Length: 137
Image 1 (cartoon, rainbow, N blue to C red):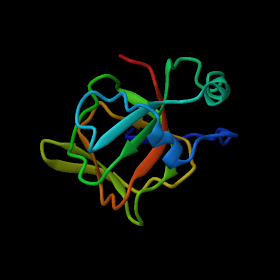
Image 2 (cartoon, rainbow, N blue to C red):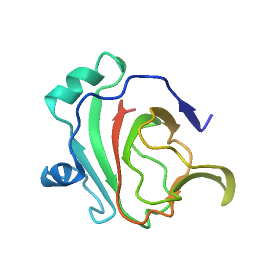
Image 3 (cartoon, one colour):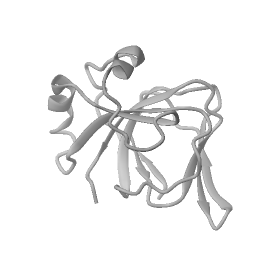
């Protein structure tokens, strides 16, 4: 399953996009396309009991033209979109350059993504911002 929606409570607190971007971007590659930032303790303390198997609680910011990729340090993640990044942003999974699944993920809905398969995020117009939770593989 490429995506699974999960019925969990909305986070009671989170930072706005500008406050997130004031934090240090800990991503070590192309920082113009992707950013990953530590969540604040209050948010982590809310999330830990909901995701006891996970160890990483982050914000991520995706910019337009993210290339197709496979996440190298995780096979799945839980995301909660704070800002879609456009009116028709789609997540697409690929197998040998053939599209196998495409979906628009709604804002403020918990979901689990399979990121061990090549995927792309298409039609980002501004910035796509989410809370992302995972365990390193």
